[in-house]
Length: 212
Image (cartoon, rainbow, N blue to C red; front, side, top):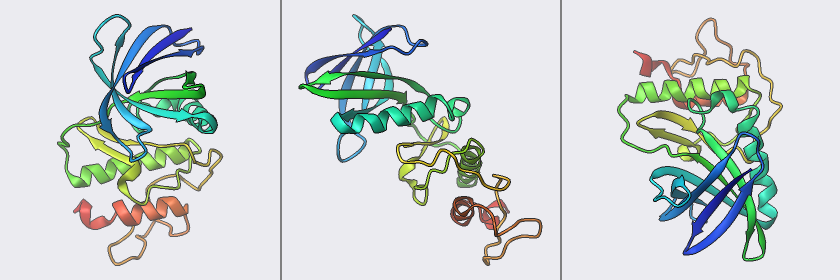
């Protein structure tokens, strides 16, 4: 068993995890920075209990009837996406549960991915395309990647986030990047009959003119 003391808006909340791979007792102190308008995703300093927390993490929180959705997302991270943590998706450090103000409460700790991007736009687009292909190889159809809201670009690379409403049993032919010419035609050897999400990603991030 592991515990987490979450310092939430001047309240100290005691949370628990019974995951066998988690041990020890930690403190997470939320900072004022909110990563969503709702405030359910925040940045925190994490560290051992009774010490000043120093490591930055992202805390995704859920209350009451939203807890089940967060639990589902955590299961996806630890099951289908376990081999992609730290490369395509953020590292997931655990899910902790308890009660806050009499309501069910849960929070998931994720890798903090921020910092000045040092790679080119072409390299960024390559990472996005390859990352989405790896998600599809793992059976995950994200469904919300037509903008950058769920794609985080940082000094450690590209990470795809938010798996609360994905399809887990996706199958598509090849699950590899297609090649589309800027004029809208498919390059010889590629097929325009592939997976709709991969085709959309190719239109947005994979045009040949960026590879020249």
